[in-house]
Amino acid sequence: SPRDNRECSEFDPEEPHFLSYPYLANHCVAALFKDTAEVIPLAATGQLFGSPIFEYDNDKQQPKERRHILVWFDSHPETVSKGAEAYYSLLNLLCCRSKIIYAYNQSRRCHEAARNISSQLEQKVEELVQPPEETLEDLEQWLRFIPQKAFQYAKYLRDMEDHSTAITTNMLNYTSMLEKIQTLSLPDDNLAFFQNFLDHNCKQWQKQIEVDLYYLKPSQHLFDQMSSTIRGIIEVKQTESDRNLQKTLQDKEAADKKREKQLESVIAGVGTGLTISGISSQVASNPSKEISPAACQQPNLPFYFACSLVDMFFHIAIAIPVGILVWLWQKR
Image (cartoon, rainbow, N blue to C red; front, side):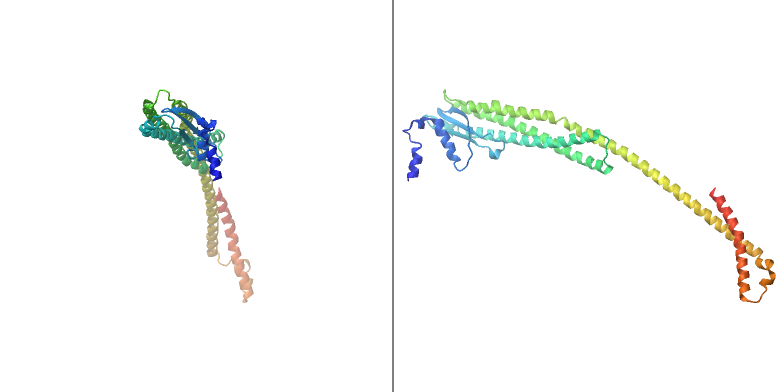
């Protein structure tokens, strides 16, 4: 079709730029991503088994977004045969490279998570420098929270060390595979970009993890110190709370005793008054007859009730002063 003819004409061997391998390599990479707007930049060039090789890398941090492409041409009689002989070494080398990149990416995630926990801890330390206003419940909640965070923090640091070990192990394997490839290489081969990955990227990443651990590890001691500090604050607050509770109970007990004593005084006064009233009623059962004999002898109901009321008030009048005196004596 006319369209196919136009596409083929773009790579016409008669055109001068067809002899430019970088130009052709760029078109190969563009063809791989022709349906996307992503542009993979050229990272390095070299020569493997007599033929030019081009490395493209977008240097994305996320492994899923990372694009690493090698465009290798066949322009030498020994390229195919030596490539077949070094196939597994080259494949393992690229696998080690991917594992190193993945391990470093995971170490970044652990570092970020550990930094978040460390920031929370430092913020709480700043709060504890000032006089704490938290209640016992708040402090006890923090005391439960700190061991959990300390465990997570230690796990992230351990994982970072594991990722550093994984990088070191895969660097050794990468070096071994590269040496096998180099034993098969031709005198004019240039594998510097393979070696640069070891000398620059890997060593820089290892150093970065080492520095991160250097800054993060001292914070582990803060967890223990903070737990001890909070326990001390809880003990002080608990002592104050117990003291206040004891004082409240003592005040309540004193008030109860006072009310009980007042009640006893009232009961004693009333009881004494009733006793005196009973004695007086036995000694002088009808004092109204002594006061007004003629009135009490009247044979009608009103005079009878009047005399009875006089007798009752007489005995009460004797009992009240005695009861009051007893009540006052009990209050002393």
